Image (cartoon, rainbow, N blue to C red; front, side, top):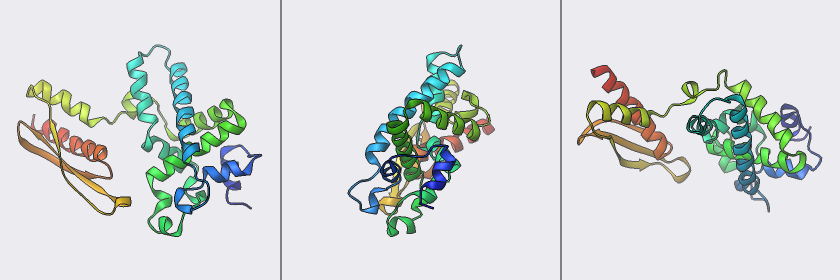
Length: 225
């Protein structure tokens, strides 16, 4: 059995052009004349459309702002990583030995990109309807409930709303530093209020660290009120 045949069964689609699925699964570290970056670019646009139409149909009475927030909770690295893991996509990616030894098969960025590339490849060969079928099935299997309250974890917004209501000011986020090699860098962020630090946290990106710090700060402020 070829490297990708189990994945094709999970997708419910068998590629006629095997080079398409091979390219979609090829990380740039694999050092081939091709990689999945162009298909990732295409898949990102296709997924944005599919999820947008899915939410438009699912929530006929919701305002544009709410739909945008729900889509933002699904169409991102974290969301696509969950769908990739549902497919066990990591075990099928072509990586360099070095990338594999650095836990490449479980990296969110790599999994998310590969999922976008697979959808891009499917779109080129089978069209939008098959991509919709695959994506919506995965969404419904991955998320028991799809709505704003279930998906939204925007702690920065929640913290800002709380501090504006209780203190009349917005929190300030400051990067304290970063550590680790480029492929595994970690950022440390501190959040303060009126010049007083109230929480700090580390994350794989500045955004993740900010959200973690905001979550800690939010809990502390809620407990003190």
